[in-house]
Image 1: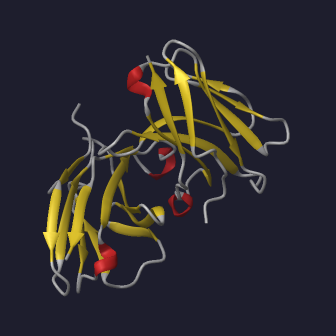
Image 2 (image 1 turned 45 degrees about the vertical axis):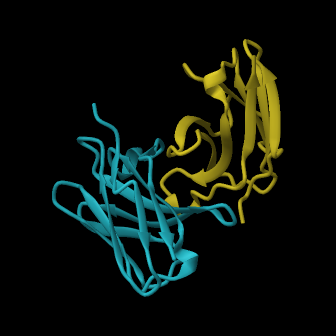
Length: 111
Length: 114
């Protein structure tokens, strides 16, 4: 079973921020929060990861609550190419055994 | 820099046959891991290789095996195929085990077992 819970689908208007929530109430102290996305017929693409501090890179921002039980991925200016399934996973840094994706959130960016 | 390359892209087999899938990691990457993705079970970890040695194994039967060559290229083999083995098989690479926080995935091999 995946250790995370995400809404099955979300819509976002092009150019607006997309905020994707994830619940991970059973996260352990050594587990990171990772976000990947998968565009149809392609392999998953790494977006961002973090432990407890908020993180930002060229693709997105990751906001992790203080108790680490939930997080939000923010795509600041969504484009049509951001339409994909977004997966939130938690895993220890060097443990690929935990690379288990749930159903994810299907984000549809609309013009 | 070329990404992770998986071949073939699509494969159709019948029950009882065996299949070999190939993965070429990004140049310089030494860690390769394999995953099975199905609509019902999502993405599940199969095994990880580093320096030609299996470092980690997921909860799959012995029909699933793999290996890694000295150039870091990897193959996985599934013997005695079952209908339930129909899935997208993904390979991912990272520079080494200590920096595998970012996994770079290939586009996968879509296996259909009839």
